[in-house]
Amino acid sequence: MEVLVNDISRLAALLQDKGWMLATAESCTGGLIAAACTELAGSSNWFERGFITYSNEAKTEMLGVDAALIASHGAVSEVVARAMAFGAVRQSRARVGVAVTGIAGPTGGTDDKPVGTVWFGFMVDGVLTSETRRFDGDRAGVRAATVQHALAGLLSRLPAPLAA
Image (cartoon, rainbow, N blue to C red; front, side):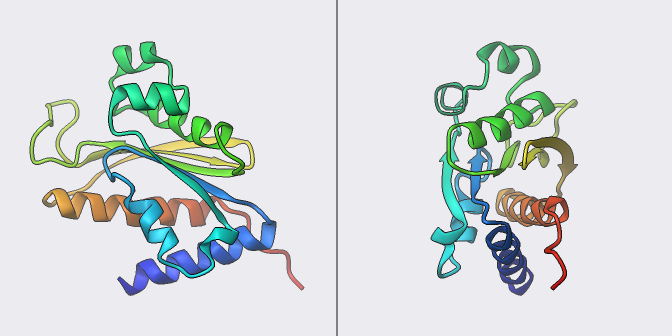
C-alpha cells in the first residue's frame, strides 16, 4: 500500500505542477483507480472525475465508444481502451485520462484473452497510447495490480516538472 500512496502523491504533484486534471474510465476495476486517487486529501485540485463503465452500453453512452468497435474487437481490446481514454478526456475538463478494460476473473477468460488480461489506454495532453498486461492471481489481485499499473503508467507518461 505504501507504494500506491507514494505513486498517488507523485501523480498529484505532477498534475498540479502542470495545472492539469485527471479523469478515469474504468471497467474491470469498478472505480478503484478513482477511489485510490481520492484517498489523498486535496485530490479535488487534480482529480476531475471518474467514469465507471462496466457494461458495453455504459462505454458507448458515457464515453462515446463506438458500439461497432466493441462488437468487432470485444470490450477487452486495444481499440476500446484507447476510445475509453479519449472519451474520458473529451467528456470532462481533464487533460489527462486513463482507461482500463480487462478480465478480472475468475470467469470470462478465453484462449485469446485469458483471465488477468487488461488493456490500458492513456491520454496525456493530446497524446493517446495503450498497452496490455496479463496479471496473475485471483480477482482482487488482478484488480489491485491493474490499479497499480495504471498509476505507474500515468507517472511514466507525464512530463517531469521544469527545473527551478
